[in-house]
Length: 269
Image (cartoon, rainbow, N blue to C red; front, side, top):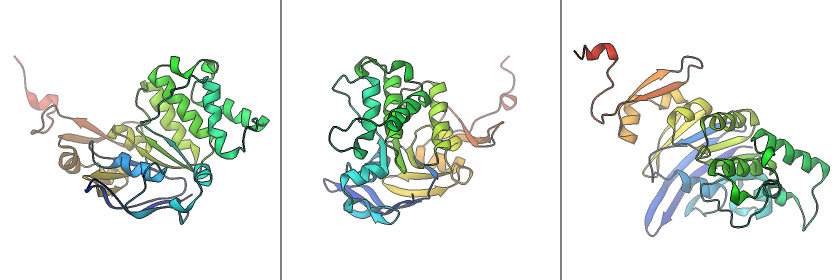
């Protein structure tokens, strides 16, 4: 499913959080939204999963304005893993994952055999099957994050939006989750603060600054030392990953001078 943000503008209390954002995410493409804190990334995502309504512009799903869809239909097309998810009720992990089927059910219909298998597979993929009978309130932040990712997959969306999905995850589970996104075949729009992870997993990156789109393209075209310094205010060297060739950033602890190689520093004696 094609996702388009067309002239998306969000104004709150007279301040524009997102300004005339145009972004096209092709069917099956993984696009990363990156930018400093307060640049409008999460606000743009909220418009996609309908937690906010744009002041102007539209979110289009295969050409259909998302705001014109019934909420149940919208939830069948778009699933979200957000930063704000709070679990107040101590459902079990299995019950929480099964909630992903809600847009597809009427009333209190029980899960079908296919849906039970779908839930089991998602819990296995996110490495939470062994927690199936645990209450979600007893889980660590990383475990809960993986449970909510499984719930989003069980929803069987065609578009998946994720806001900092690697928060709370250890390195292994970060890699597993992002690899799963790559293999899913879904249209994915994901906010990531780790630029190296973004470069590794995303087909294209869209850079936001002060609510405006300043660059969009393949990781090697976007993640230049000049852009990183202009947008993020840090000095970085861009090098190819030795195994994948994806761009990787090596940061300087100084905000004003380039990274020196060990050879250029000379002897300390």
